[in-house]
Amino acid sequence: MARPIEAKFHALRQRGRKAFIPFITAGDPDLDTTVRLVAELARCGSDIVELGIPFSDPIADGPVIQRSSERALRHGYGMADYLKAVERIRRETDVPILLFSYYNPIFQYGLEGLARDARSAGADGVLVTDMTPEESEEYRDCLERHGLDAVFLAAPTSDAERIRKIAGCSRGFVYLVSRTGVTGVQESVSESVVPTLRRIRAHTTLPVAVGFGVSRPEHVRAVWEFADGAVVGSALVACVEKCRTSAEALSQVGDLSLWLTGRRSSAAPQRSEPRS
Image (cartoon, rainbow, N blue to C red; front, side, top):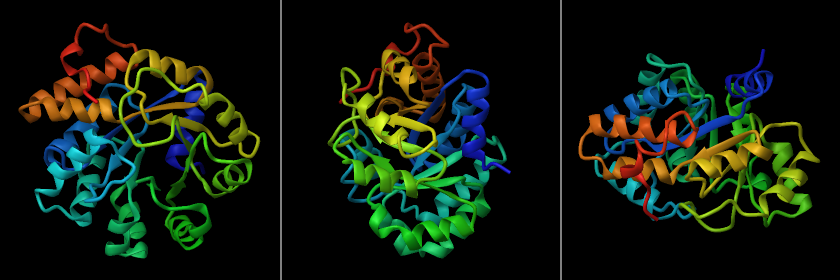
């Protein structure tokens, strides 16, 4: 039986559609709002949700997501709190959830315990930004035992051998970073994405989703032309940052996701335009 992430991509393919995959930071502005935001994103048509685990030194993230981690960390939340939030999310929606983390919080919690508890809570996969394929055997085996997908990052700078390793280690989908550097909004999708995606597909039949800098409807449409999914992070996190209340965040994030996927005109979310 296909796991939820794989099943979602298969169902979308059968309908001739591509995936919209939003990223939000758990605990920003608080965990109650996070639970409601994921449910709202699912209601507005999100196919998979990436739930970022806050970390004090997020080296792959730009300033928008760094600030969101800082805001969440001020609450004193720990991994157990984020997993309890996933449990609560599961009462509201069955949208596949991918935990997006650095390895340090997982190491502190304990790899075996994290895999067991994440699956029990209802998570479907894990992406560890600073986990390399070469060092991932124990990590992958542990996730596999607990029925979790291990998603890995590929980049335009990845050579053929590294792409082969990344493709071989991934389950669920391969996450293709659209550019070198950190997360954040950009004007257009890099031209290097398409040749990199072709190199990935030479080694795997897994779906490929593209993220980092995808922040406008035209970016989403461009990614959907050649990839299986578009990931939007900083634009949504910046929207949360600008909202003064949880109710406003729910409304604005819902509007923005509908705008990004072409389900609503650009007029509604103009006030939610992200800042770099």
